[in-house]
Length: 340
Image (cartoon, rainbow, N blue to C red; front, top):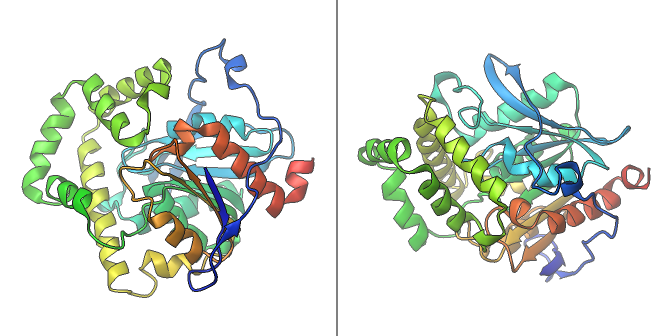
C-alpha cells in the first residue's frame, strides 16, 4: 500500500502522508448474524421525472451527509459495506444512476456523464442534504469529478475510487473493449449474451475483471449479484444503459483529448476545490493504475492511496482500508465530524 499527498501536476514530487485513521470501525457481521451485510433499504425518488432508487444507510445523530455513486454496470449495492463502516460518521445515501439498478430510463436515453452528473446534483438539491461527502467509483468517479468541479457548494469532501479518467493513450485493453461496445453492429450480440447467458457465468466474469482476488467475495454477495443479473433482464433498457453509457463516456474522453474547456475531465479536475482522496487498486484491469498519480496531482487538494491487493472496486474488495482512509480525510477536513 502506498500513501501520498501529491502536489499539483506541475509541482514537486509527492511526499508520504498518513492517510489511515485509527478510529474503531463497526463489525458489520454482528448486524447480519455473522453473514455479509444485506443491502440497505431502498426507496424510489422522483428526480425531475426519472424514478431513481436511493438506498439509505442511517448514521448516528448529527452524522454528516454522504452520497455514493456507482460505476458502469453497477448499482447502489456496490456501497453496502463501505457505507455501513462509515455510518458512525456519515449518514449515507447511495443512488442507482438512471438506467442502472432499479432506476428508470433517463429522458431521451441520455446516458452521458454530464446527464448523470445533473442527476446527482438534482438529487442532492431535492433532498436538501448538501454539501455532502461525495464518493464515486469508476464511471461514478468521473461523474463525481464533474459534480465537484461545477457545483463546489454541494461537495464538502470527495473520494474517488478508480475514477474513469481519460486514458493518456488508447492501450490494448481499450482496443479490445471498443469493438465490443462502441460499434453498432455489436450491440445486438451483446444484448443477446446479456439476456441469455448463464447468470452465474456472467457474474464470475465480471468479478474476475473487477477484483484482484475474487475469492474474497462472500457467497452472499455472489448470490446478490446473480439475482441482480436475473432481475435486470426484465428491464427493456438494461443493455441499452450499458452500451450507451460506455459510448458516451468514450465521447467525453474525446473532448478531453481535444482539451475542450468545460468538457474535458482533466480540465474539470483542476478546478475541484474540495479536499479529495484518490484510491486505486494496483491490480485494476479496467482503469490503468498509471492514471492514479496523474489524477491526484491534477486535483489541487488531494491525497492518494494505492492498494496492492485490490482491483477496480476497492470499496467492495478492501472496504475497511478504504473506510479508514475516508475517516482520515474526514478528520482532516471536518474535525468536528469525527470528534463528536
